[in-house]
Picture 1: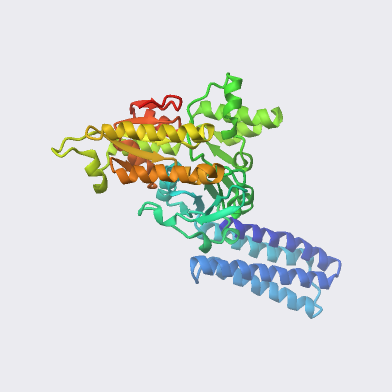
Picture 2 (picture 1 turned 120 degrees about the vertical axis):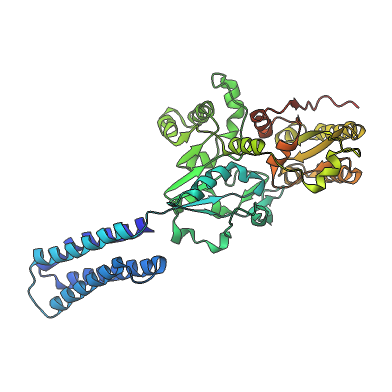
Length: 446
């Protein structure tokens, strides 16, 4: 707000020069018109300060003095008085600088920083950044969960989702309908969805596409909701294979991109050079920062502090005599499903049969990707009913936990080992030293 008001006041300084020139040329109509604009601008600035800081500020008092001066000069011109251009300019300029000086001292230097998560389960990719911003007295941090749509098989928008009520209770939430982006124009906006309209499974509301958000902030920052296994950037085939994680709208439109490591930063740069040429290298070297992922920061913090087992999970975690079972986190990913959908469903059924036999010793904690159901519905509609039946059968048989909550990290910390597809969860398990077993969909024997 302060920067916006200062920009408005800059217009006064330019107007004062034109007023002096108009007086010198005896162009009274032009001088009066600019004096009217100066007064309207000063009134608008004063009203905004009253609205945000309350009445009685010294800044507004000086704006009122300025308006009195402008009115006096206007009346003198209207009455046909001969004014000295330089003297008139000096009076206006002195009053203007007294306003600027007072506003610099009186109005606080508060940055407004807005976080726009869309799925509560992906909040961990922004949370530690928000925590630091929220603790800074010079930052007003706002969390505004945004709505998103499922996509139908034909690409049209399906069901609208809003997950504002699923965020942790310690995170104050602002509803997206109650925040005026154009009026507020936050200093920074953080996003974790990179796709705009490129995703075939879901889409955030078009207003929140990165291309559009650029209009409403001085700095758009993108932090991926996922983390990747580190990539050898000398292996051009591997870089090309994984480039679809990078060559996305948010990477193009964001002013800053924060990734998990310096190596991943170089991977992002090479991917963008690959698609846009060497001319973009310097720009991406400047805007991509390899300073670490908030996801890793959060999981390490949770692991160090420990976490309590939810009451509803305890019957699965403990044997009747009180001994704790081994807990295996089973993760099924979207990418693995899309590569071999039929075989993947068969594999899941086989996995569940094996763990059902071991239920007395091992607790299975199944956590499918949060968008798995929507992905099956959108991209493999012929398999949708089959997938739902697998889910319902697993729940009905009651030998393991089905975790579709927004808290992914809880499952990671409580598990003794990981089994499943290659995904962000593998990198997180590595960060907290959990044993990892990667699922091979080609092996499906009972």
